[in-house]
Picture 1 (tube, helix red, strand yellow):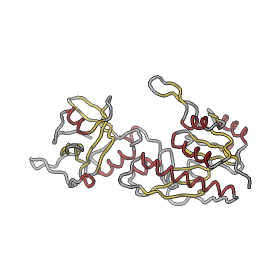
Picture 2 (cartoon, one colour):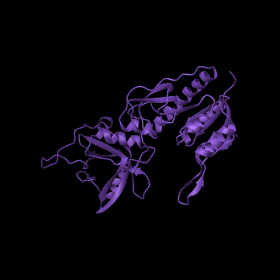
Picture 3 (cartoon, one colour):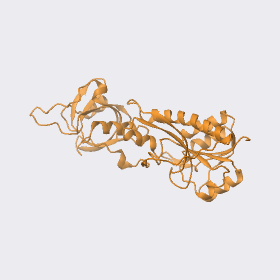
Length: 328
C-alpha cells in the first residue's frame, strides 16, 4: 500500500509531540486542524493553540474550523486516507468522519472503556488507580465509544501526579500510534469492540476541586496530585477572621513523610477534629487531620499570592499546631 495521506487533528500542547513524531517518521501530513484562536490573559488577547503554532513551524497546511460545516469543508479539500486525532477537543460528526478513506483513529489517555471523556489522566489519579494506559481507537459518533485498535498499560506510581502521568501516557501513546499507522499502511485493520464497564472522566469543574478533610487522607492526596496541572485542589480557610481560598500544590501521606499515621488526641482527651493542624515539621510543612489519619501539606498558593512553601504560609498566617485550618 502507498504511504497514507494523513490529516492531524489536535489542539493543546500534549498533542504537539504526536505531530512532531509523525513528521519525524516521514508521514504524509496533508493538513493539520486545530480549534480556533481563543482570548487569553488579562488583556484577552487572541492566542493560537499550541498545535497551530507547531504545525506552522513544521510548514504544514493548517485549518481552524469554527463549526462542523467548516471542518467538513477542510476535510473535503484535503481528501485524507486517515484522520489522526489527539486531544482535538470537539466531537467529530458523521459527515466529517466519512471523509477519510479509512476513517479516524484517536489516541485516548486511558484504557477504554474506563475514563471516557475530557480528563482521563486526572480522574485516574483522583480515583487512586495504580494502572492506567493509552488506547488507540476508531472514532464513531459517540464519546470515546468506538472500536479499539490497540492499547497499552502504563503504571501509576505513588510519586506520580498529573504532570508525570501526561508525560508517561504521551510517550506510550506516541509509540503505540506509530505502530498502528504501520499496520494500517500494511492493510492490517483491527477493530475490537470495547468491553467491560465504562466510566466517565468529565472536564474538571470547580466543584471537583474542593478538598474535604473529613474524608480519607488518601482521597485528599489523590485529588491534589490529580489536579497538579490545574485547576488545583483547594479549600476555604478562615485566617485572621477573613475567608480565603487556599490552593494546595504538594502533599504527602504520613507513611511517605516518616510520621506515624495516627493523629494525636487533643490534650483534653477529645478526638482531634478534621481540618485541624496537628503538627508542624520543620523544612517540610504541616500536618492536617483528615477523617482517618493525617495529610502533610508541603506547598500552597493562597488567594491572590504566589505559590509558597507551606511553612512560609503558616508563619505569615500566624497559625500553630491545634488551630483549625478548615471547617467543612
